[in-house]
Image (tube, rainbow, N blue to C red; front, side, top):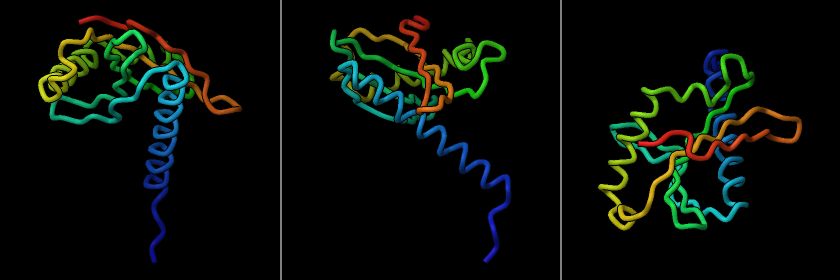
Length: 131
């Protein structure tokens, strides 16, 4: 049986780190009484990492960014205008397909994660951008 190439192993470990980061972000928000509604919502416009309902009744679209270093502003800085537009279009699709949430106020947050000895250091940027 052929062994996976190093690039395949690297992609697998990267996907595993990303999944762990998304789980850590979901746990973080859950501990703050957010109800997780959807994870990895995909449509042709893009993907939404986490969609939650805040204790105040706001629909929160949380973009999870994992960066091992904070060069160039880290994960939060990587949510540029183009990425914001993709998140907005995917959110519009979400609201069109889930009309029960369409009357709720919507907020866009960024969860900027960095590896730490005991999991992840999480910087939660609420109202990261507006539509």
